[in-house]
Image (cartoon, rainbow, N blue to C red; front, side, top):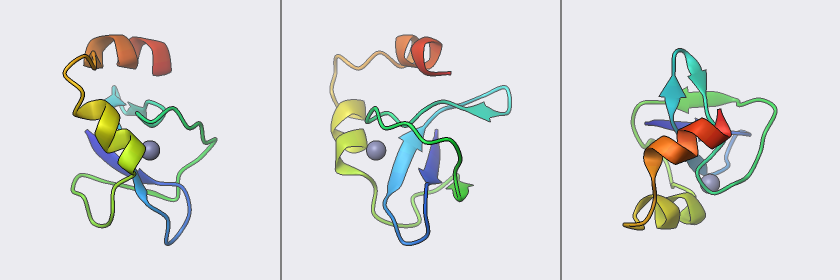
Length: 68
Ligand SMILES: [Zn+2]
């Protein structure tokens, strides 16, 4: 799990790191690039990302396959 920031001062989105590259954010937003990514939540996380990842129906494996 990585916390990614699109622009300075913005919320951190959650993404997965697979073989050195990152998936799109869990909330469904799509960015071409990220300003930074972190191992730890160093700021406020995106509420939509948190809601989806905490949903028991969220399937991490399927998400990664579809969003790599
Ligand atoms: Zn998000």
